[in-house]
Length: 262
Ligand SMILES: [Zn+2]
Image (cartoon, rainbow, N blue to C red; front, side):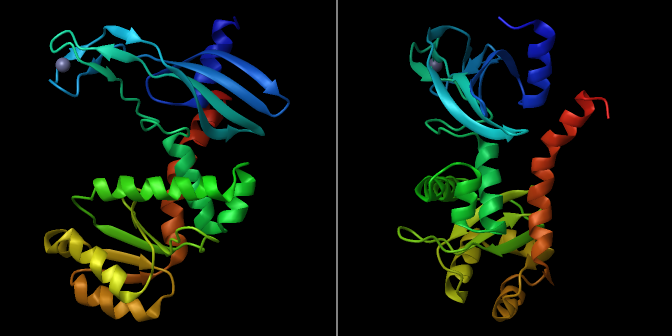
């Protein structure tokens, strides 16, 4: 077992809320497996709402995370199955950094999406040692997550294009809540009708609150935005959209620098 100060140091580097590193292993010269533990022992039963800490079964699995320095990082995660002491039902605990049944962290998905936006699917795949179809899976899963979690309020909206994927389902546009720095929709086409349909699905209450829209240079859509979002100012600035997503990813780098004392 490695020493405590070292594990503490790696915990700081990994920087995931409530997570403690308990072990690590360099499996190749550029790949590291980091075994982590959830610090929070209790979890809320999704059936009756009661909190419990009664472990029914441990369930270890591997989750890919964003790289550290030149190392590919694989997290060895225990998603415990708990048994509710009230209703006796068994459920899997929720982990803040990875969705159920996903094999990659939320922040890795964000990184991949950012790279797809900046370059294209193939270079994003190469950079993350994934296949283009794995990237497509991330995009598909993001699409279904976003459909389930429609935003309740948006002040600044960003619309950006995505390079088309070869074969399979194509995505053409991504909508981002620039204040929350979160993607809110993936659209398969970026024509006027598709954008209008998505915007109307949000409802006028949300649309009227939007103060600013950043788009890249799709001039034909400016009139549509002005029509549907009466209170929004349109800014034609693609990098504005990217800047917000980058800030989110920079949080972790900042922590690393603090640890190193710079
Ligand atoms: Zn229960």
